[in-house]
Every structure is written in C-alpha cells, then in structure tokens.
Image 1 (cartoon, helix red, strand yellow):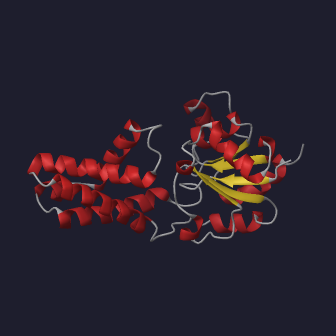
Image 2 (tube, helix red, strand yellow; image 1 turned 120 degrees about the vertical axis):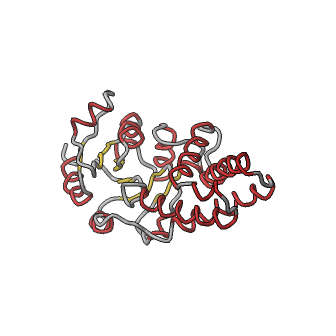
Image 3 (cartoon, rainbow, N blue to C red; image 1 turned 180 degrees about the vertical axis):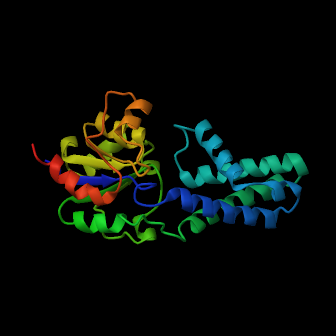
Length: 246
C-alpha cells in the first residue's frame, strides 16, 4: 500500500532550467560590473554553467554543499579571467563568494512552478503523506509550496545523493515507513526512477518532453523500469490510484 509520495524538485515541480538561466545572466552582469574588460564582455552564461559543472564533476563524492560548489564554479571563471587579464586573487575570491550568494537570491526570485504542480499537490494533500526528495537546495517556502510537505530531504544535508539508496533510507527513517510504502515522482531516469527502484520504492517517471517509455528503455537499458510514465502531474492522482490496487 502506498502511503507516501515523494517528489523530485528541479524539472519536476518547477522549471529549474529557466531559473538557472535567469540567475546566471544576472550574475554575469554583476561580474561584468565588478571586473570590466574584454574577457567579461565576451563571457557567456553557458560558460558560467560549464565551469560549475566541471567543478561538480571533479568534486563528486567530496563536496556536497551546493552553495560552495556554485561559488567554486564562479571562482574558476574568475581564475580564467585573471589568466587572461590579470587581477587580484584575494579580491576575486571575495567576488566569487559574493556572486555565489547572489546567484541563489536571483534563482529564487521566480518560483517558475509548472502549471500542473499546485493542482496536483492540492489533490494529493491529505490523501498521501507528501515529501520533497532532491539533489538540489530549493526550499518549498521560497516557491510558495510551504505546508504541502511533511518531509523535505536534500542530498547536501546528508552527504549522499540520488540515486544512492542511502538518501531514500533517510526518508524512510523520517516517515517511519518501509520502501514498499513509498513512491518517488521525478523527471530523471537514473536519479529518480532507477534510484527509487533499486531502493525498493515505486517510481513514476515524469516525461514532460513526451519521449515515451521506449526512449527510457533505449537510453537506460537497466533492469529497473518505472511503474508508470506520465507526461503531466495532472495524470498522477489516477496513476497512484492504479498502483494502489494489488
């Protein structure tokens, strides 16, 4: 029997790609103002994103604090700037910390909730114990979703990330439930679907791009399969009802 429905955050409940883009564009303007010159004039938000990705890959399994990783990403950008145009390393380190903090402020200016998010949560609230299980760091109250989730678990707080079974076990301990009573709804085939199934949970794949179940099997030919595939959260209540039938 399903008792708890956990949701991924980014690209499941809100459009993280949009808010990340907007925040990086705003940070880019801050960097240009603080460090004017040909390098920053030519700098793009995509490069800022790439530097953050590089740092994250290098520190995978070592550094989990997303604010720290974001600042380190900006620090890498500024190191490239110094190599090209010179500058003060200490001042750049302070700038990286400053724009790292600003990034999260810019990110949360726009909730960017998908249109189906709140109606789905309104329908499920009271019928299931709801939670947020995320490798991100966006607090529900910053996007207007306070009051919906009994359980909020972020990977960075436990130094273990989806798809690792350990993060799913954190939820089980918090809720006092076994894995068979839990379902994770998310957009990421590996982190959300395969991770949940390997933890013994049910998994619903949110396929907003309508790739289809065939695409999942083609890209992720693991033994684990989603229990259901939906293209919108509006379909979720009916799917959960079907999963509850033995």
